[in-house]
Length: 450
Image (cartoon, rainbow, N blue to C red; front, side):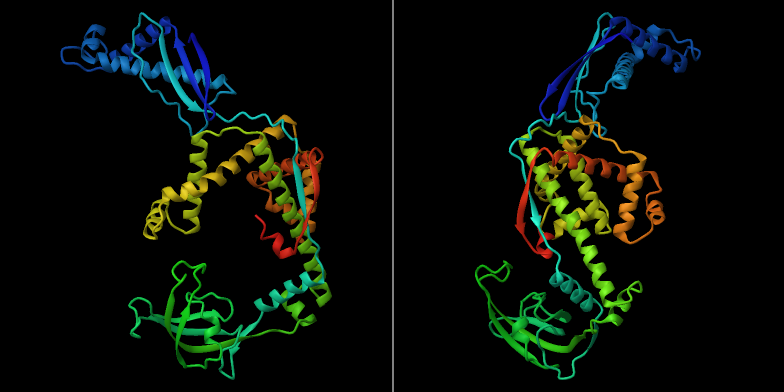
Protein backbone atom coordinates (compact mmCIF):
# COMPACT_ATOMS: atom_id res chain seq x y z
CA UNK A 1 0.00 0.00 0.00
CA UNK A 2 1.32 3.40 -0.99
CA UNK A 3 0.71 5.90 1.79
CA UNK A 4 2.20 8.87 3.57
CA UNK A 5 2.02 9.61 7.29
CA UNK A 6 2.49 12.73 9.37
CA UNK A 7 2.76 12.82 13.17
CA UNK A 8 1.91 15.96 15.14
CA UNK A 9 2.72 16.14 18.86
CA UNK A 10 -0.16 17.21 21.12
CA UNK A 11 -0.42 17.96 24.84
CA UNK A 12 -0.26 15.23 27.50
CA UNK A 13 1.80 12.88 25.35
CA UNK A 14 -0.86 12.58 22.65
CA UNK A 15 -0.23 12.34 18.91
CA UNK A 16 -2.26 13.30 15.84
CA UNK A 17 -1.58 10.99 12.90
CA UNK A 18 -2.61 12.12 9.42
CA UNK A 19 -2.56 9.36 6.80
CA UNK A 20 -2.89 9.77 3.04
CA UNK A 21 -3.62 6.65 0.98
CA UNK A 22 -2.89 6.86 -2.75
CA UNK A 23 -5.97 6.88 -5.02
CA UNK A 24 -4.75 3.73 -6.81
CA UNK A 25 -4.93 1.82 -3.50
CA UNK A 26 -8.31 3.39 -2.77
CA UNK A 27 -9.63 2.20 -6.12
CA UNK A 28 -8.13 -1.27 -5.64
CA UNK A 29 -9.62 -1.47 -2.18
CA UNK A 30 -13.07 -0.53 -3.47
CA UNK A 31 -12.87 -3.12 -6.23
CA UNK A 32 -11.76 -5.77 -3.71
CA UNK A 33 -14.80 -4.99 -1.58
CA UNK A 34 -17.11 -5.30 -4.60
CA UNK A 35 -15.51 -8.64 -5.49
CA UNK A 36 -16.18 -9.88 -1.98
CA UNK A 37 -19.82 -8.79 -2.21
CA UNK A 38 -20.18 -10.43 -5.65
CA UNK A 39 -19.05 -13.79 -4.24
CA UNK A 40 -21.50 -13.72 -1.35
CA UNK A 41 -24.48 -11.67 -2.49
CA UNK A 42 -27.79 -13.45 -3.05
CA UNK A 43 -30.24 -11.29 -4.99
CA UNK A 44 -33.44 -12.61 -6.63
CA UNK A 45 -32.99 -13.00 -10.40
CA UNK A 46 -29.24 -13.58 -10.21
CA UNK A 47 -27.19 -16.66 -9.51
CA UNK A 48 -24.89 -16.45 -6.47
CA UNK A 49 -21.54 -15.06 -7.54
CA UNK A 50 -22.94 -13.53 -10.75
CA UNK A 51 -24.57 -10.34 -9.52
CA UNK A 52 -23.38 -7.38 -11.66
CA UNK A 53 -21.29 -4.79 -9.81
CA UNK A 54 -23.65 -2.01 -10.93
CA UNK A 55 -26.56 -3.76 -9.23
CA UNK A 56 -24.59 -4.15 -6.01
CA UNK A 57 -23.58 -0.49 -6.08
CA UNK A 58 -27.20 0.62 -6.46
CA UNK A 59 -28.42 -1.67 -3.67
CA UNK A 60 -25.46 -1.57 -1.24
CA UNK A 61 -23.60 1.60 -2.20
CA UNK A 62 -23.21 3.03 1.30
CA UNK A 63 -22.20 -0.34 2.79
CA UNK A 64 -19.62 -0.86 0.04
CA UNK A 65 -18.04 2.50 0.78
CA UNK A 66 -18.13 1.99 4.58
CA UNK A 67 -16.53 -1.45 4.32
CA UNK A 68 -13.85 -0.14 1.96
CA UNK A 69 -12.98 2.76 4.25
CA UNK A 70 -12.83 0.42 7.25
CA UNK A 71 -10.52 -2.03 5.44
CA UNK A 72 -8.24 0.75 4.16
CA UNK A 73 -7.96 2.39 7.58
CA UNK A 74 -7.34 -0.89 9.42
CA UNK A 75 -4.75 -2.05 6.88
CA UNK A 76 -2.92 1.27 6.80
CA UNK A 77 -2.79 1.60 10.61
CA UNK A 78 -1.52 -1.96 10.96
CA UNK A 79 1.18 -1.26 8.39
CA UNK A 80 2.21 1.98 10.12
CA UNK A 81 2.23 0.65 13.68
CA UNK A 82 4.05 -2.57 12.75
CA UNK A 83 7.03 -0.44 11.70
CA UNK A 84 6.62 2.46 14.13
CA UNK A 85 8.45 2.47 17.47
CA UNK A 86 8.35 6.00 18.85
CA UNK A 87 4.72 6.81 18.00
CA UNK A 88 2.96 3.54 18.77
CA UNK A 89 -0.32 3.95 20.70
CA UNK A 90 -0.49 2.78 24.29
CA UNK A 91 -2.17 -0.64 24.70
CA UNK A 92 -5.15 0.96 26.46
CA UNK A 93 -5.34 4.03 24.13
CA UNK A 94 -7.23 3.19 20.96
CA UNK A 95 -6.85 5.72 18.10
CA UNK A 96 -9.86 8.03 17.90
CA UNK A 97 -11.19 9.42 14.61
CA UNK A 98 -13.28 12.56 15.02
CA UNK A 99 -14.58 12.56 11.45
CA UNK A 100 -14.93 9.60 9.07
CA UNK A 101 -13.51 10.43 5.63
CA UNK A 102 -15.64 10.24 2.49
CA UNK A 103 -14.73 7.70 -0.16
CA UNK A 104 -13.95 8.98 -3.66
CA UNK A 105 -12.08 6.43 -5.76
CA UNK A 106 -10.79 9.20 -8.01
CA UNK A 107 -8.90 10.85 -5.14
CA UNK A 108 -6.45 10.05 -2.34
CA UNK A 109 -8.08 9.02 0.95
CA UNK A 110 -7.02 11.25 3.85
CA UNK A 111 -7.95 10.61 7.46
CA UNK A 112 -6.74 11.69 10.91
CA UNK A 113 -6.65 9.86 14.23
CA UNK A 114 -5.43 10.93 17.66
CA UNK A 115 -4.12 8.68 20.42
CA UNK A 116 -1.84 8.59 23.46
CA UNK A 117 1.78 7.45 23.28
CA UNK A 118 4.30 6.57 25.97
CA UNK A 119 5.72 9.80 27.42
CA UNK A 120 9.18 10.73 26.22
CA UNK A 121 11.27 12.24 28.99
CA UNK A 122 14.89 13.26 29.11
CA UNK A 123 16.17 13.28 32.67
CA UNK A 124 18.95 15.83 32.54
CA UNK A 125 18.50 18.11 35.54
CA UNK A 126 20.16 16.75 38.69
CA UNK A 127 21.15 20.16 40.07
CA UNK A 128 20.48 20.92 43.71
CA UNK A 129 19.26 17.44 44.59
CA UNK A 130 20.02 16.57 48.20
CA UNK A 131 19.07 13.30 49.85
CA UNK A 132 18.85 13.20 53.63
CA UNK A 133 19.54 9.73 55.01
CA UNK A 134 17.73 9.03 58.31
CA UNK A 135 20.07 8.05 61.15
CA UNK A 136 18.72 5.06 63.03
CA UNK A 137 20.59 2.93 65.56
CA UNK A 138 19.37 -0.48 66.69
CA UNK A 139 20.28 -0.83 70.36
CA UNK A 140 19.25 -2.78 73.43
CA UNK A 141 16.12 -0.65 73.95
CA UNK A 142 14.81 -1.34 70.43
CA UNK A 143 15.48 -5.07 70.81
CA UNK A 144 13.73 -5.11 74.19
CA UNK A 145 10.69 -3.37 72.67
CA UNK A 146 10.48 -6.07 70.01
CA UNK A 147 10.79 -8.81 72.62
CA UNK A 148 8.03 -7.20 74.68
CA UNK A 149 5.81 -7.16 71.61
CA UNK A 150 6.53 -10.87 71.13
CA UNK A 151 5.76 -11.40 74.81
CA UNK A 152 2.38 -9.68 74.32
CA UNK A 153 1.60 -11.87 71.31
CA UNK A 154 2.41 -15.01 73.30
CA UNK A 155 0.47 -13.99 76.42
CA UNK A 156 -2.37 -16.10 77.83
CA UNK A 157 -5.67 -14.29 78.46
CA UNK A 158 -7.15 -15.27 81.83
CA UNK A 159 -9.99 -14.09 84.06
CA UNK A 160 -9.00 -11.39 86.52
CA UNK A 161 -9.42 -12.59 90.07
CA UNK A 162 -10.12 -9.30 91.87
CA UNK A 163 -12.70 -8.34 89.21
CA UNK A 164 -11.82 -4.62 89.13
CA UNK A 165 -11.10 -2.84 85.84
CA UNK A 166 -7.60 -1.41 85.49
CA UNK A 167 -5.49 -0.09 82.65
CA UNK A 168 -4.40 -2.76 80.13
CA UNK A 169 -7.21 -5.12 81.18
CA UNK A 170 -9.29 -6.72 78.45
CA UNK A 171 -12.91 -5.90 79.17
CA UNK A 172 -16.23 -6.86 77.67
CA UNK A 173 -18.99 -4.28 77.99
CA UNK A 174 -22.58 -3.61 77.01
CA UNK A 175 -23.31 0.04 76.33
CA UNK A 176 -25.87 2.45 74.92
CA UNK A 177 -26.15 6.19 74.55
CA UNK A 178 -28.80 8.02 76.59
CA UNK A 179 -30.81 11.15 75.82
CA UNK A 180 -31.29 14.09 78.19
CA UNK A 181 -34.09 12.22 79.94
CA UNK A 182 -31.92 9.17 80.51
CA UNK A 183 -33.70 7.06 77.90
CA UNK A 184 -31.77 4.80 75.51
CA UNK A 185 -31.23 6.31 72.07
CA UNK A 186 -32.49 3.91 69.45
CA UNK A 187 -29.75 2.21 67.45
CA UNK A 188 -26.97 3.05 69.93
CA UNK A 189 -27.08 -0.21 71.91
CA UNK A 190 -24.10 -2.57 71.59
CA UNK A 191 -23.50 -5.81 73.46
CA UNK A 192 -20.37 -7.85 74.11
CA UNK A 193 -17.96 -5.18 72.90
CA UNK A 194 -14.35 -6.16 73.74
CA UNK A 195 -11.38 -3.80 73.98
CA UNK A 196 -8.19 -3.19 75.93
CA UNK A 197 -8.48 -0.43 78.54
CA UNK A 198 -6.14 2.42 77.65
CA UNK A 199 -6.11 1.72 73.93
CA UNK A 200 -8.88 4.19 73.15
CA UNK A 201 -10.35 1.67 70.74
CA UNK A 202 -13.96 2.29 71.68
CA UNK A 203 -16.39 4.70 70.11
CA UNK A 204 -16.92 6.95 73.16
CA UNK A 205 -13.30 6.85 74.45
CA UNK A 206 -14.41 5.90 77.95
CA UNK A 207 -11.24 4.06 79.04
CA UNK A 208 -10.57 6.25 82.09
CA UNK A 209 -14.23 6.36 83.10
CA UNK A 210 -14.59 2.59 83.51
CA UNK A 211 -11.40 2.10 85.56
CA UNK A 212 -12.40 0.85 89.01
CA UNK A 213 -15.68 -0.71 87.85
CA UNK A 214 -16.41 -4.29 88.86
CA UNK A 215 -17.82 -7.14 86.86
CA UNK A 216 -21.62 -6.87 86.35
CA UNK A 217 -21.55 -3.25 87.54
CA UNK A 218 -23.56 -0.67 85.54
CA UNK A 219 -22.56 2.97 85.42
CA UNK A 220 -23.91 6.07 83.73
CA UNK A 221 -21.09 8.19 82.32
CA UNK A 222 -21.41 11.81 81.27
CA UNK A 223 -18.48 12.91 79.14
CA UNK A 224 -17.76 16.27 77.51
CA UNK A 225 -15.54 16.16 74.43
CA UNK A 226 -13.11 18.86 73.33
CA UNK A 227 -14.02 21.02 70.35
CA UNK A 228 -10.94 19.77 68.52
CA UNK A 229 -11.62 16.08 69.17
CA UNK A 230 -10.45 13.90 66.27
CA UNK A 231 -13.94 12.40 65.94
CA UNK A 232 -16.29 15.00 64.38
CA UNK A 233 -19.28 13.08 65.79
CA UNK A 234 -18.00 13.80 69.32
CA UNK A 235 -16.18 17.13 68.97
CA UNK A 236 -17.65 19.81 71.25
CA UNK A 237 -20.50 17.56 72.44
CA UNK A 238 -21.55 16.04 75.75
CA UNK A 239 -22.60 12.40 75.75
CA UNK A 240 -24.39 10.27 78.32
CA UNK A 241 -23.49 6.58 78.13
CA UNK A 242 -24.78 3.62 80.11
CA UNK A 243 -22.06 0.99 80.52
CA UNK A 244 -22.21 -2.50 82.03
CA UNK A 245 -19.00 -4.48 82.52
CA UNK A 246 -19.68 -8.14 81.77
CA UNK A 247 -16.15 -9.58 81.82
CA UNK A 248 -12.67 -8.56 82.93
CA UNK A 249 -9.57 -10.39 81.74
CA UNK A 250 -5.86 -9.80 81.80
CA UNK A 251 -2.85 -10.99 79.87
CA UNK A 252 -0.65 -13.49 81.67
CA UNK A 253 2.73 -12.59 80.23
CA UNK A 254 5.33 -15.35 79.93
CA UNK A 255 8.74 -14.85 81.53
CA UNK A 256 11.40 -13.65 79.11
CA UNK A 257 13.99 -16.40 79.31
CA UNK A 258 15.52 -19.26 77.32
CA UNK A 259 12.26 -21.24 77.46
CA UNK A 260 10.38 -18.26 76.02
CA UNK A 261 12.89 -18.01 73.18
CA UNK A 262 12.48 -21.73 72.41
CA UNK A 263 8.68 -21.37 72.45
CA UNK A 264 8.89 -18.50 69.97
CA UNK A 265 11.01 -20.46 67.48
CA UNK A 266 12.64 -23.84 67.71
CA UNK A 267 15.77 -22.51 66.01
CA UNK A 268 16.59 -20.56 69.19
CA UNK A 269 18.39 -22.38 71.97
CA UNK A 270 18.81 -19.39 74.26
CA UNK A 271 17.41 -15.92 74.77
CA UNK A 272 20.72 -14.56 73.51
CA UNK A 273 20.18 -16.42 70.23
CA UNK A 274 16.80 -14.78 69.82
CA UNK A 275 18.13 -11.31 70.61
CA UNK A 276 20.93 -11.70 68.07
CA UNK A 277 18.45 -12.80 65.40
CA UNK A 278 16.07 -9.95 66.23
CA UNK A 279 18.91 -7.43 65.96
CA UNK A 280 19.95 -8.86 62.60
CA UNK A 281 16.39 -8.76 61.23
CA UNK A 282 15.78 -5.24 62.51
CA UNK A 283 18.96 -4.00 60.85
CA UNK A 284 17.93 -5.61 57.57
CA UNK A 285 14.50 -3.97 57.84
CA UNK A 286 16.10 -0.66 58.80
CA UNK A 287 18.48 -0.67 55.83
CA UNK A 288 15.69 -1.60 53.45
CA UNK A 289 13.42 1.15 54.80
CA UNK A 290 16.16 3.80 54.74
CA UNK A 291 16.94 2.94 51.12
CA UNK A 292 13.24 3.08 50.25
CA UNK A 293 12.92 6.57 51.76
CA UNK A 294 16.08 7.72 49.97
CA UNK A 295 14.80 6.38 46.66
CA UNK A 296 11.43 8.08 47.15
CA UNK A 297 13.10 11.40 47.94
CA UNK A 298 15.35 11.13 44.90
CA UNK A 299 12.46 10.35 42.57
CA UNK A 300 10.29 13.14 43.98
CA UNK A 301 13.06 15.64 43.26
CA UNK A 302 13.74 14.24 39.79
CA UNK A 303 10.03 14.49 38.93
CA UNK A 304 9.98 18.09 40.14
CA UNK A 305 13.13 19.10 38.26
CA UNK A 306 12.30 17.26 35.03
CA UNK A 307 8.61 18.07 34.42
CA UNK A 308 6.59 16.23 31.80
CA UNK A 309 2.97 15.29 31.27
CA UNK A 310 1.49 11.82 31.32
CA UNK A 311 -1.40 10.84 29.03
CA UNK A 312 -4.87 10.76 30.49
CA UNK A 313 -5.42 7.16 29.35
CA UNK A 314 -2.36 6.05 31.35
CA UNK A 315 -3.66 7.78 34.49
CA UNK A 316 -7.15 6.34 33.96
CA UNK A 317 -5.70 2.83 33.62
CA UNK A 318 -3.70 3.26 36.83
CA UNK A 319 -6.73 4.51 38.78
CA UNK A 320 -8.86 1.69 37.40
CA UNK A 321 -6.21 -0.80 38.50
CA UNK A 322 -6.17 0.64 42.01
CA UNK A 323 -9.96 0.47 42.18
CA UNK A 324 -10.00 -3.18 41.06
CA UNK A 325 -7.26 -4.03 43.57
CA UNK A 326 -9.29 -2.41 46.35
CA UNK A 327 -12.27 -4.55 45.31
CA UNK A 328 -10.09 -7.67 45.57
CA UNK A 329 -8.98 -6.65 49.05
CA UNK A 330 -12.62 -6.36 50.09
CA UNK A 331 -13.32 -9.68 48.33
CA UNK A 332 -15.98 -8.18 46.13
CA UNK A 333 -16.50 -6.97 42.57
CA UNK A 334 -15.68 -3.41 41.39
CA UNK A 335 -19.42 -2.84 40.88
CA UNK A 336 -20.31 -4.00 44.39
CA UNK A 337 -17.47 -1.92 45.81
CA UNK A 338 -18.98 1.18 44.24
CA UNK A 339 -22.32 0.40 45.87
CA UNK A 340 -20.60 -0.09 49.25
CA UNK A 341 -18.73 3.21 48.91
CA UNK A 342 -21.90 5.05 47.91
CA UNK A 343 -23.77 3.61 50.90
CA UNK A 344 -21.07 4.98 53.22
CA UNK A 345 -21.61 8.53 51.90
CA UNK A 346 -18.55 8.57 49.64
CA UNK A 347 -18.45 8.36 45.84
CA UNK A 348 -16.14 6.53 43.45
CA UNK A 349 -15.53 9.77 41.57
CA UNK A 350 -14.32 11.57 44.70
CA UNK A 351 -12.08 8.68 45.73
CA UNK A 352 -10.45 8.58 42.30
CA UNK A 353 -9.86 12.34 42.53
CA UNK A 354 -8.18 11.86 45.91
CA UNK A 355 -5.92 9.19 44.42
CA UNK A 356 -5.00 11.19 41.33
CA UNK A 357 -2.08 13.17 42.78
CA UNK A 358 -0.28 10.14 44.22
CA UNK A 359 -0.98 8.08 41.11
CA UNK A 360 0.51 10.77 38.86
CA UNK A 361 3.66 10.95 40.99
CA UNK A 362 4.01 7.18 41.00
CA UNK A 363 3.60 6.94 37.21
CA UNK A 364 6.09 9.73 36.59
CA UNK A 365 8.59 8.11 38.96
CA UNK A 366 8.21 4.79 37.17
CA UNK A 367 8.67 6.45 33.76
CA UNK A 368 11.79 8.28 34.92
CA UNK A 369 13.32 5.06 36.27
CA UNK A 370 12.57 3.22 33.02
CA UNK A 371 14.00 6.08 30.96
CA UNK A 372 17.23 6.21 32.97
CA UNK A 373 17.69 2.44 32.83
CA UNK A 374 17.37 2.53 29.03
CA UNK A 375 19.50 5.65 28.65
CA UNK A 376 22.33 4.17 30.71
CA UNK A 377 22.00 0.70 29.23
CA UNK A 378 21.75 -0.90 32.66
CA UNK A 379 21.56 -4.68 32.60
CA UNK A 380 22.28 -7.54 34.98
CA UNK A 381 24.39 -10.63 34.51
CA UNK A 382 23.59 -14.19 35.64
CA UNK A 383 26.37 -13.79 38.23
CA UNK A 384 24.65 -10.73 39.68
CA UNK A 385 21.36 -12.62 39.96
CA UNK A 386 23.18 -15.44 41.75
CA UNK A 387 24.58 -12.84 44.17
CA UNK A 388 21.03 -11.59 44.77
CA UNK A 389 19.89 -15.14 45.55
CA UNK A 390 22.68 -15.45 48.12
CA UNK A 391 21.82 -12.07 49.66
CA UNK A 392 18.12 -12.92 49.97
CA UNK A 393 18.96 -16.30 51.49
CA UNK A 394 21.31 -14.77 54.06
CA UNK A 395 18.83 -12.08 55.07
CA UNK A 396 15.93 -14.51 55.31
CA UNK A 397 17.84 -17.28 57.07
CA UNK A 398 16.95 -19.79 54.35
CA UNK A 399 18.91 -21.75 51.75
CA UNK A 400 19.80 -20.51 48.29
CA UNK A 401 17.87 -23.45 46.85
CA UNK A 402 14.71 -22.25 48.64
CA UNK A 403 15.22 -18.77 47.21
CA UNK A 404 15.70 -20.11 43.68
CA UNK A 405 12.56 -22.18 44.00
CA UNK A 406 10.62 -19.04 44.90
CA UNK A 407 11.90 -17.31 41.75
CA UNK A 408 11.72 -20.29 39.43
CA UNK A 409 8.72 -19.06 37.41
CA UNK A 410 9.48 -16.54 34.67
CA UNK A 411 7.38 -13.71 36.09
CA UNK A 412 8.97 -13.81 39.54
CA UNK A 413 12.47 -13.97 38.09
CA UNK A 414 11.70 -11.04 35.77
CA UNK A 415 10.61 -9.06 38.81
CA UNK A 416 13.92 -9.84 40.53
CA UNK A 417 15.87 -8.82 37.42
CA UNK A 418 13.97 -5.50 37.18
CA UNK A 419 14.50 -4.84 40.89
CA UNK A 420 18.23 -5.53 40.53
CA UNK A 421 18.44 -3.14 37.58
CA UNK A 422 16.74 -0.42 39.61
CA UNK A 423 19.12 -0.91 42.53
CA UNK A 424 22.09 -0.60 40.17
CA UNK A 425 20.59 2.61 38.80
CA UNK A 426 20.11 4.09 42.29
CA UNK A 427 23.70 3.21 43.22
CA UNK A 428 24.89 5.20 40.19
CA UNK A 429 22.59 8.14 40.87
CA UNK A 430 23.67 8.47 44.49
CA UNK A 431 27.17 9.20 43.17
CA UNK A 432 25.79 12.13 41.19
CA UNK A 433 23.67 13.80 43.87
CA UNK A 434 24.39 15.02 47.38
CA UNK A 435 23.64 12.59 50.21
CA UNK A 436 23.77 13.99 53.74
CA UNK A 437 22.99 12.67 57.21
CA UNK A 438 19.37 13.23 58.11
CA UNK A 439 17.62 13.42 61.46
CA UNK A 440 18.19 10.86 64.16
CA UNK A 441 15.07 8.84 64.77
CA UNK A 442 13.85 5.68 66.44
CA UNK A 443 13.25 2.42 64.63
CA UNK A 444 9.51 2.89 65.16
CA UNK A 445 9.50 6.45 63.80
CA UNK A 446 11.46 5.31 60.75
CA UNK A 447 8.52 3.19 59.64
CA UNK A 448 6.08 5.98 60.36
CA UNK A 449 7.79 8.15 57.73
CA UNK A 450 5.95 8.62 54.44
